[in-house]
Amino acid sequence: MKIAIGSDHRGRDAGAKLASYLRTLGHVVDLLGDISIESCDYPDSAYLVGQAVSSGDADRGILLCSNGIGMSIAANKIQGVRAALVYDQNNAQKSKKHNDANVLCLSGESTPNQQLEKIVEAWLATDFEGGRHAKRVEKINAIERGENPTKIANDHATAR
Image (cartoon, rainbow, N blue to C red; front, side):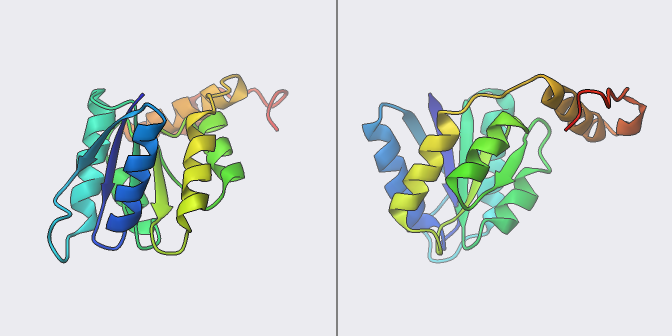
């Protein structure tokens, strides 16, 4: 799988370690953005990773900053990106199963490296469940297109 990773200066070390780890698992990893400078702005990396995922240049994206919040906000502005901020394996799996998240946002400062690896492994190993969740993802896509998601029919019998 081809994975684009981006970070700001506060997620740089965790991002570099995660990239090395993912390469040992056989993934192709591109580190995007200028992390060689002392301070850099998270929207720059969020844009580069989001564009790589949106265009199909990367299968999935991973973003790391201090707490992951800014990266998540910025990445979700890019058409076709469904970025999820997660702090544990369970929510990483749910972000993929239920929301078809294609970009994972993580805290590079407060999550230990081994935990980051486990979160990413769980996310990469999880497939989108589809079913009732497919309609919900389509509603997200409708919002992205500037459409009213309430106009998409609901099937309350299957909703949980």
